Amino acid sequence: MAAGEAVPYSKTGGLADVVGALPGALAALGHDVRVFLPYYAATRKSGTKVKETGVTVSVPMRGVPVEALILERRNGPGARVYFVRNDTYYDRDGLYQGPDGDYPDTAERFMFFSRAVVAAIQALQLQPDVVHCHDWQTGLVPALARGSSNGTPIIQAATVFTIHNMAFQGQFWHFDMEMTGLPWSTFTPEGIEFYGKINMLKAGIVYADVINAVSRRYSREIQAEELGSGLDGVLRARRNDVFGILNGVDYEHWNPATDPFIAATYGPDDMAGKKRCRQDLLAEFGLKVPDKVPVLGMVGRLTDQKGLDILTEELSDIIKLDTCFVLLGTGAPEYHEQLEKLARRHPGRIGVRLGFDNGLAHKIEAGCDMFLMPSRFEPCGLNQMYSLRYGTVPIVRATGGLDDTIAEFDPLSSAGNGFKFVTYSGRALLACVRKAVRLFGDKRAWSRLVANGMKCDFSWASSARRYVELYRTALKRHAAHLPAR
Ligand code: ADP
Image 1 (tube, protein in one colour):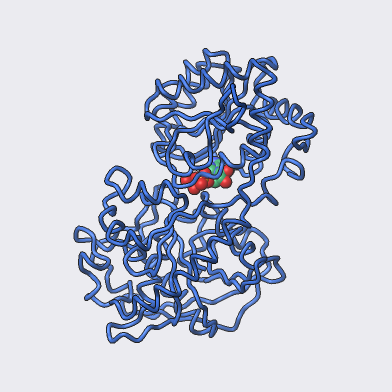
Image 2 (tube, protein in one colour; image 1 turned 180 degrees about the vertical axis):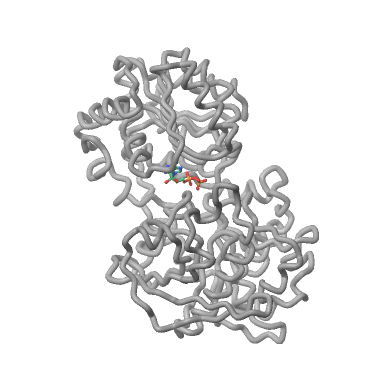
């Protein structure tokens, strides 16, 4: 498996949670899994004990050989992890971005990473059955593994490519072609070229034996223009090889009964701890509201994708429903400003923390009554599944994985685990929150809703089994696809 990030070594979003957990779940099913990751400054500082494998790979980048040391994690649980260490590329404070945005050598860093992974698989003589790559940072791997145009594969393995977000594609100008390690014959509309540019996500889609998106609904949505980010046609051309396995939840890290970050632990049979978590969260943000006022929360990247435009538009009206709101996130500077302004306008009712803080993310899951995810699109979404387990009711827009995991609560039958709205608009969001706030006043109905959510099981065990089936499919299709390039 290869990816740009994985918990507990590096993280910017859900990808890290997935790559942190899936290998262990596969190992538990008896598979031998090795994970390749860049060795970032964050990894070095995480205290991960590493040892040298004795393998150094060398990749010619613009004619100059560039080396990486392949390190191995020592004594960790679960699957084995290899780190690609090149301090010039990866020993930086951000994973993908510095204070001024994307690093200017982004293309070089991840073209190198993809090539170093392929070289390391060979040098370590791993002989995998399947190589599973995630997102554009590793999109070249399926293409590289196929080898030269004479049909001799470099790695005799089936390839699986998981798309966690179609909106991030790794597009770079054609002058970088030499750094991909691929022949110019691949720079065509049928290959990795996309409107005159190199597109690394497209490389994964075109050359992998099978493609997976992280929920059923998202796997269909990205085959249509609205959410296809220009690659919907490319995906449709491969529709028989596109699957949609939902991400699982790592309940070892996200479990209110054992969570070390929260003020008091709790479970479905003893909810007293959740009350304490709520008080603790309000204190953390300096807010004071009576019990009857629901606390709404949100954690995530502050971008248009996450619905920040409709949220900021309606937040004052949401507060006027006699609610209180806390948010943790970083992202677009204009949202930072707007949120801070709203917090000043509603002192004691809105708490905003602009930053990345895993411990606080756990406290928000535990301390809130409701969790907002008004996303414009959401490939899978993890926070709504975490919220369910923490007895925090998700209010989501019906898109992607949010639509697949959340069912609208029906007060008559008491079925359902949250609230959903369909139209992407501030008014629809506000109406949905109003419905939730009204039900919050009905303590019996609310506890049934909370209990329904806490019972939901999105553990990795079942998703990992589905991945194993997908790997078997990939092996079959691999035999049929060769030699394709
Ligand atoms: P995405 O991958 O699109 O960012 P997901 O919902 O799939 O969204 O996953 C986001 C993950 O990142 C969750 O585990 C969430 O708790 C975490 N996260 C996002 N922003 C922050 C933040 N500012 N501080 C701490 N954790 C965060």
